[in-house]
Length: 194
Image 1 (cartoon, rainbow, N blue to C red):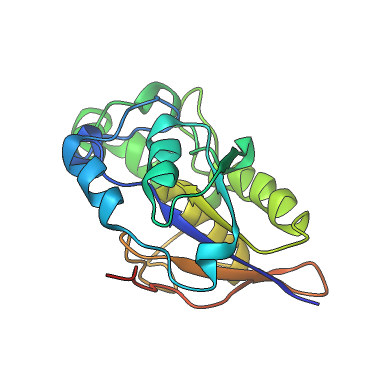
Image 2 (image 1 turned 60 degrees about the vertical axis):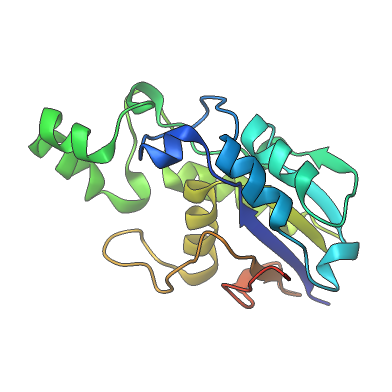
Protein backbone atom coordinates (compact mmCIF):
# COMPACT_ATOMS: atom_id res chain seq x y z
CA UNK A 1 0.00 0.00 0.00
CA UNK A 2 1.24 3.52 -0.81
CA UNK A 3 1.39 6.26 1.81
CA UNK A 4 0.82 9.79 0.47
CA UNK A 5 2.24 12.92 2.05
CA UNK A 6 2.19 16.62 1.23
CA UNK A 7 4.92 19.15 1.83
CA UNK A 8 5.11 22.93 1.57
CA UNK A 9 7.68 25.62 2.06
CA UNK A 10 7.30 28.01 4.99
CA UNK A 11 5.96 31.51 4.35
CA UNK A 12 8.27 34.49 3.74
CA UNK A 13 11.01 35.84 5.99
CA UNK A 14 13.05 39.03 5.65
CA UNK A 15 16.00 36.90 4.51
CA UNK A 16 13.82 35.38 1.76
CA UNK A 17 12.97 38.89 0.62
CA UNK A 18 16.70 39.75 0.63
CA UNK A 19 17.53 36.43 -1.14
CA UNK A 20 19.88 35.34 1.66
CA UNK A 21 20.71 31.69 2.34
CA UNK A 22 18.98 30.88 5.64
CA UNK A 23 19.87 27.25 6.18
CA UNK A 24 19.65 26.42 9.87
CA UNK A 25 19.78 30.08 10.96
CA UNK A 26 16.53 30.38 12.90
CA UNK A 27 14.94 33.38 11.20
CA UNK A 28 11.30 34.31 11.96
CA UNK A 29 8.54 35.00 9.48
CA UNK A 30 8.37 38.58 8.29
CA UNK A 31 5.10 40.51 8.81
CA UNK A 32 4.32 39.76 5.15
CA UNK A 33 5.06 36.06 5.79
CA UNK A 34 2.72 35.99 8.80
CA UNK A 35 -0.06 37.50 6.67
CA UNK A 36 0.69 35.07 3.84
CA UNK A 37 0.50 31.98 6.08
CA UNK A 38 -2.77 33.19 7.62
CA UNK A 39 -4.33 33.18 4.12
CA UNK A 40 -3.31 29.60 3.34
CA UNK A 41 -6.05 26.99 3.74
CA UNK A 42 -5.27 23.32 3.32
CA UNK A 43 -7.56 21.51 0.86
CA UNK A 44 -9.38 18.27 1.65
CA UNK A 45 -8.24 15.62 2.55
CA UNK A 46 -4.92 17.23 3.61
CA UNK A 47 -6.75 19.39 6.14
CA UNK A 48 -7.39 16.20 8.17
CA UNK A 49 -3.85 14.81 7.96
CA UNK A 50 -1.41 14.94 10.86
CA UNK A 51 0.63 18.16 10.67
CA UNK A 52 4.43 18.13 10.99
CA UNK A 53 6.99 20.90 10.89
CA UNK A 54 10.69 21.52 10.75
CA UNK A 55 12.01 22.66 14.15
CA UNK A 56 12.96 26.07 12.73
CA UNK A 57 10.59 28.84 13.83
CA UNK A 58 9.71 30.04 10.32
CA UNK A 59 8.34 26.60 9.49
CA UNK A 60 6.70 26.01 12.89
CA UNK A 61 4.92 29.36 12.76
CA UNK A 62 3.69 28.68 9.22
CA UNK A 63 2.34 25.29 10.34
CA UNK A 64 0.55 26.94 13.28
CA UNK A 65 -1.07 29.59 11.07
CA UNK A 66 -2.33 27.25 8.35
CA UNK A 67 -6.09 26.87 8.27
CA UNK A 68 -7.81 24.94 9.61
CA UNK A 69 -5.97 25.15 12.92
CA UNK A 70 -4.41 21.89 14.11
CA UNK A 71 -1.75 20.60 16.49
CA UNK A 72 1.77 20.66 15.06
CA UNK A 73 4.43 18.03 15.80
CA UNK A 74 8.08 18.98 15.25
CA UNK A 75 10.23 16.63 13.18
CA UNK A 76 13.98 17.29 12.94
CA UNK A 77 14.24 15.41 9.63
CA UNK A 78 12.32 18.28 8.01
CA UNK A 79 14.91 20.92 8.97
CA UNK A 80 16.56 23.00 6.28
CA UNK A 81 19.85 21.93 4.79
CA UNK A 82 22.72 23.69 6.56
CA UNK A 83 24.62 26.20 4.44
CA UNK A 84 27.34 26.49 7.07
CA UNK A 85 29.62 29.51 6.64
CA UNK A 86 27.53 30.75 3.71
CA UNK A 87 24.36 31.37 5.74
CA UNK A 88 23.29 35.00 5.66
CA UNK A 89 24.94 35.57 2.27
CA UNK A 90 23.29 35.78 -1.13
CA UNK A 91 24.20 33.38 -3.94
CA UNK A 92 25.03 36.38 -6.16
CA UNK A 93 27.33 37.77 -3.46
CA UNK A 94 29.06 34.42 -3.01
CA UNK A 95 29.58 34.09 -6.77
CA UNK A 96 31.12 37.59 -6.84
CA UNK A 97 33.32 37.02 -3.79
CA UNK A 98 34.40 33.41 -4.35
CA UNK A 99 34.21 33.26 -8.14
CA UNK A 100 35.32 29.95 -9.64
CA UNK A 101 35.47 28.26 -6.22
CA UNK A 102 31.74 28.80 -5.67
CA UNK A 103 30.82 27.90 -9.26
CA UNK A 104 32.81 24.64 -8.98
CA UNK A 105 30.97 23.80 -5.75
CA UNK A 106 27.59 24.48 -7.41
CA UNK A 107 28.49 22.11 -10.26
CA UNK A 108 28.81 19.23 -7.80
CA UNK A 109 25.01 18.90 -7.67
CA UNK A 110 24.10 16.41 -4.94
CA UNK A 111 27.60 16.73 -3.49
CA UNK A 112 27.53 20.55 -3.22
CA UNK A 113 28.66 21.30 0.33
CA UNK A 114 29.32 24.73 1.85
CA UNK A 115 32.14 24.99 4.43
CA UNK A 116 30.70 23.56 7.66
CA UNK A 117 27.40 22.79 5.90
CA UNK A 118 25.42 19.83 4.62
CA UNK A 119 25.24 18.36 1.11
CA UNK A 120 21.94 17.74 -0.70
CA UNK A 121 22.91 14.05 -0.77
CA UNK A 122 23.01 14.03 3.05
CA UNK A 123 19.65 15.85 3.25
CA UNK A 124 18.22 13.34 0.76
CA UNK A 125 19.31 10.42 2.97
CA UNK A 126 17.58 11.84 6.06
CA UNK A 127 14.42 12.58 4.04
CA UNK A 128 14.39 9.05 2.63
CA UNK A 129 14.59 7.61 6.17
CA UNK A 130 11.79 9.95 7.31
CA UNK A 131 9.47 9.33 4.35
CA UNK A 132 9.86 5.56 4.35
CA UNK A 133 9.00 5.47 8.07
CA UNK A 134 5.57 7.06 7.46
CA UNK A 135 2.62 4.80 8.21
CA UNK A 136 -0.17 7.32 7.59
CA UNK A 137 -0.59 10.48 5.49
CA UNK A 138 0.97 13.69 6.84
CA UNK A 139 1.31 17.29 5.71
CA UNK A 140 4.72 18.80 6.45
CA UNK A 141 6.06 22.35 6.51
CA UNK A 142 9.69 22.49 5.51
CA UNK A 143 12.18 24.49 3.42
CA UNK A 144 13.25 25.11 -0.17
CA UNK A 145 16.55 23.17 -0.22
CA UNK A 146 14.97 20.31 1.71
CA UNK A 147 12.05 20.07 -0.73
CA UNK A 148 14.49 20.19 -3.66
CA UNK A 149 16.40 17.29 -2.07
CA UNK A 150 13.09 15.41 -1.76
CA UNK A 151 12.39 16.07 -5.45
CA UNK A 152 15.85 14.69 -6.29
CA UNK A 153 15.12 11.59 -4.21
CA UNK A 154 11.79 11.00 -5.98
CA UNK A 155 13.01 11.62 -9.53
CA UNK A 156 16.69 10.67 -9.63
CA UNK A 157 17.64 14.29 -10.46
CA UNK A 158 21.32 14.81 -9.69
CA UNK A 159 20.79 18.53 -8.96
CA UNK A 160 22.84 19.65 -11.92
CA UNK A 161 20.98 21.59 -14.56
CA UNK A 162 17.31 22.43 -14.31
CA UNK A 163 15.07 20.37 -12.02
CA UNK A 164 12.69 17.95 -13.76
CA UNK A 165 9.72 19.97 -12.47
CA UNK A 166 9.36 23.66 -11.66
CA UNK A 167 8.07 24.04 -8.12
CA UNK A 168 5.80 26.90 -7.06
CA UNK A 169 6.89 27.77 -3.52
CA UNK A 170 3.38 29.02 -2.66
CA UNK A 171 1.75 25.62 -3.25
CA UNK A 172 1.52 22.12 -1.79
CA UNK A 173 3.56 19.30 -3.29
CA UNK A 174 2.33 15.72 -3.02
CA UNK A 175 4.60 12.68 -2.89
CA UNK A 176 4.01 9.08 -1.93
CA UNK A 177 5.96 6.17 -0.55
CA UNK A 178 5.21 3.11 -2.64
CA UNK A 179 4.91 -0.52 -1.53
CA UNK A 180 8.58 -0.97 -2.48
CA UNK A 181 9.43 1.89 -0.02
CA UNK A 182 10.53 4.20 -2.83
CA UNK A 183 9.53 7.87 -2.78
CA UNK A 184 7.63 9.04 -5.87
CA UNK A 185 6.18 12.29 -7.12
CA UNK A 186 2.42 12.58 -6.71
CA UNK A 187 0.95 15.94 -7.74
CA UNK A 188 3.03 19.10 -7.60
CA UNK A 189 2.03 22.76 -7.35
CA UNK A 190 -1.41 22.25 -5.80
CA UNK A 191 -2.75 25.66 -4.74
CA UNK A 192 -4.17 26.39 -1.33
CA UNK A 193 -7.90 26.87 -1.08
CA UNK A 194 -9.16 30.47 -0.97
